[in-house]
Image 1 (cartoon, rainbow, N blue to C red):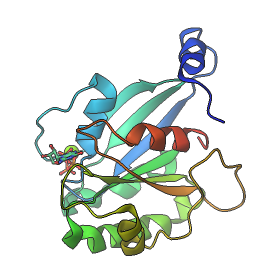
Image 2 (image 1 turned 30 degrees about the vertical axis):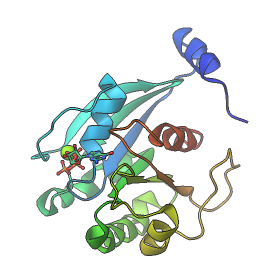
Image 3 (image 1 turned 30 degrees about the horizontal axis):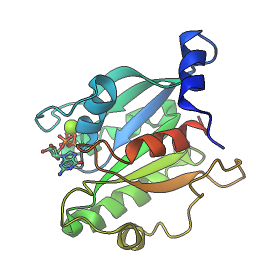
Length: 189
Ligand SMILES: Nc1nc2c(ncn2[C@@H]2O[C@H](COP(=O)(O)OP(=O)(O)OP(=O)(O)O)[C@@H](O)[C@H]2O)c(=O)[nH]1
Ligand SMILES: [Mg+2]
């Protein structure tokens, strides 16, 4: 069962716990990484330019405090991603579910990340973003296309030997779905 929000917030306010985990926001350009970061930090979506360089923000999410590295998804910026792997407590990999033609490219990048030696036990939250868009793939279709058929499970699942990985569908602009995903990820940090 989930810890209720009020308890997390009270513990955080009392300064009990509240580890600062390092999260990497990864995924193709235009997936919605920076929109998510701004929503988590400021509670609203801002009009944003594509990333020109990696950025870093501290934020609080209930009981947890995160340092988030938003690394930018353009091809040139993807080359910088490995520099951040050794530090990562967890990865949030954002996929534009409303751009089915680029899901295969997302899968290539995701598979490369999952195979990296320095992240073999790093938990991965995959967010299928933009469910508000009528072109968005269903969760089942996105799972198939990303090869995420056998995943950890969405509940509070005990850590076994396998790396935790799960797909959550979301719409950042409509503030839906990502909270559950980040809560899920937090239990493994
Ligand atoms: N419809 C819809 N659009 C979204 C959503 N989230 C983000 N967007 C839009 O997607 C576009 C790209 O968002 P960004 O957050 O800049 O994408 P990014 O992943 O940071 O891209 P790079 O910085 O290039 O790596 C913007 O026009 C956002 O407004 C969503 O939930 N629904
Ligand atoms: Mg960005």
